[in-house]
Length: 344
Image (cartoon, rainbow, N blue to C red; front, top):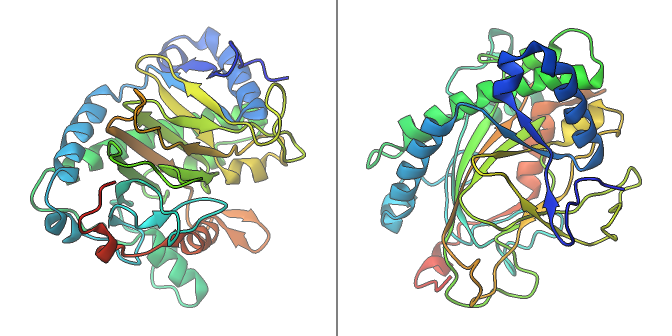
């Protein structure tokens, strides 16, 4: 049974203090054990002592400024069919039961990608891998009317470094020799992306089954998440694919995060590399009831730690190819006509 259930109905995540990892070598074996257990159990943990406070505050300020700008200003950097840029309200439906026309997610977002060029070995390619590299390293259309590039870009770089550090710990937890994962997540190699996501206070009731962010697992190695409000839920699952422990299949548990903590969850890549011992756990952001205290504006900052585009997950399957296929599979539309006068 999951021992992260501390009280009925809620999930309190195991906590790892990166400050202690960096300063106290005698604590490292215990930290590796905590990470291993968390990844085998719920696939989620919380981290403190990251050193990201300044970057988070700056990114929060500029992201709010961006999302409060006019629709025309934001659409000047719209992503369209590309992975990076602005994704307007009602333009995406993420997850296993994505229905972008009938039940789009209740959020808007801005995504950014790697600031560096692909590694030399991935430049000037032909064939399918060239498309994958173009996707993973597509330029980000930063807005000129605010300082989102320096703020969200600064968060992206700093959080990416923390992600590489975490992968070093996770390599030890997996019993891997060498630092292959950390190298593939290092600057100049990774194809990480980051996102600022705005969940506005709802003015009318959501549709049945409609979420702020639909149920899904992540496609990369791991994800770092900061959120300034509640709403994140996860669905622990056993090795057989269902929920385990206190949660029957289909049960969702709200996540509690310590003050100043950042949520970390492993993605599909680490589940595959672990031989399915680690769990890439389904999660979502539920839509609140109109009259509930949870119905407030909510901002999250996310860094997706994604290894080198040519990192082999399985024979014939690369990290970049897996990422691109999932992006194209999940529902997206322009939502331009539906946005005008939207009460959501």
